Length: 123
Image (cartoon, rainbow, N blue to C red):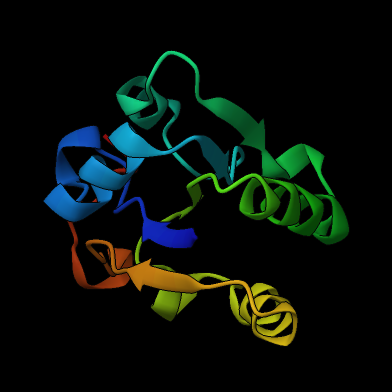
């Protein structure tokens, strides 16, 4: 199973409870290293395989998902904010659909920096 999880706006305490629980039980986490706060990886169990997708092609990301699914493992694809709103997950979901790999999505906390005059970046 692949879980698409929204990491929220950056502060580790703003991830949803469901997102945190999925990170804690994941066998594999693929995170958007150029965007996701690496402190969230501290929720991973000791033997969790962690991949930085900023250093990977889409095909490499999908290959890891396929390998984990074939081994009966739980994969978390960790995106910034709410992946359904801002993430580029459709192309990944299309491949998973075509290959019969189950997935779900856990929305993250969103933040529109343009509506908050006090926004200074990620916490």
